[in-house]
Image 1 (cartoon, rainbow, N blue to C red):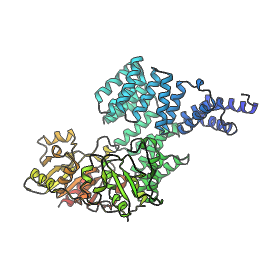
Image 2: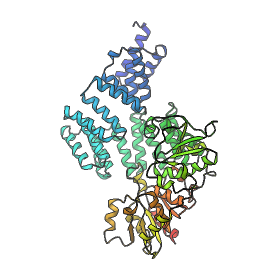
Image 3: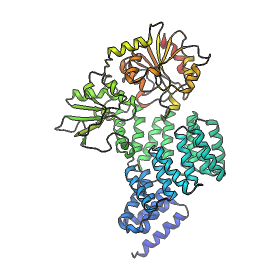
Length: 590
């Protein structure tokens, strides 16, 4: 291919800028060349590298696609396909990414670097066993592979195998003393293990050695966030953005910290900066939570729908292999049949199940597909019991998500439907009356912790010891959650615990059991979990203990919620401190 002199000079200029580390200027020159020659191979490759370096992965993927269109297939090796797969992965196109990882392994079998990239892909999908197997394959070929050792250690920490994780990362540090990535791996492990003092020491040492390493600064921001030092977390993310203004994770994390500081307009401005760069469904989805929290329902629900465009998100829904079309309330249809599928947490599904009745009231023939754990509970709800299935139908013409229904019905604070009624089986009530026996004093149900893997668990779960100290001794207390944490069980077995507390987990085999137990309580006290949604649906007087900035559905500042009229919201007065909540509790128990 013959290039005219002007284009050749521009390419040389762009390459010089790239070599000098002036990535933005180099990108600008290359992009101007592509305006005239959109498929020029001598531009596509270096520009793809620049897009990766500046974390503009969707643009990098586009460059790889153009290279495939103009290059001979035999000229594209396995490394090309693994790079293309990475760009697709970071763009959220997971299915296409996997196809290209597999293609790279066909061309480069038993190549440690390719096995490692594929393992990291499996890790991102939380396919931990598959990822460990791939790391082990890489280590069988190169036993000193630093990246494989770090990757394996991170998986162990994610699966709460902290001793194994530390052993692997210490091996990496023995092989590569003070290696920045090994130090960062050790910092992440200690963070995941909630060893915050140790994590801070490791990060300070590593940042002193490598002050310009973005990953370390991101970890530092997370460490400050988890230890309730919001201003320092904000500074860490700003430090990252000074090093590289295009680090999306730092921009999103900064916006999140701003919400925790209750600087909501500033947080929205950060999301809008990202959206000015182009359509980004991940950013729109995250922005929706801030909008909903502020009571901006119209734009919030609309942006919440952006999650359905995220391939990774769709990958986990029951509708991976779709049939039919998406149902929309305002789109005419000759078919009145609609499949409603579940997504997100169990509490979310309980909360939004009220919209199934609205669909029925609108003349639709609904099939409501729910998780097997929720199926018996929904069968006790007369208004929707006939719609509920726990096996996904194979034939349907229209479908929608239960989490999309507030958007379809354009819900605002004034139009939230009431919870559904629950008609618990008489024999189950009798069973639970026999389990509890004669009532001797007030019965208070407690839910002090939720899923430990929840991203906000550090901010919403509390120690049973701390909660009981704020509660009077004269009541009987019943733990309503099945997964009682070891630290709480240990406390209950000490003389320090003076309250009468019953551990009910061995009696709870279904949500119907939990509902029966809740129904026999005089009051429920708890943190934001699925059990609270169940108590609210039952209409049980409930005190919901909320962090300073709670989940979007509980809005801000109010003590009541339109989602559940029987729930009273008790909020922290300052970030990370439950003391103000403990002071409020007694007046609501009298």
